[in-house]
Length: 75
Image (cartoon, rainbow, N blue to C red):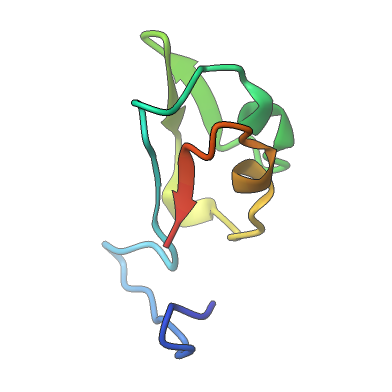
């Protein structure tokens, strides 16, 4: 995976290849991101979208693209 500087970001045992966040101020909990994630890494808990496992994320961007409120940010 490439980071913002165009370099390959290496992962370690305690750091996923990519990291992504959900801005809960923007998130409407519509569930479109859950449906878009082919790996099933998103779920709803306590009326919030949660990330189940960042280590398994393939950084495809489907969740980010499905989010109409632009609440998901891949880094």
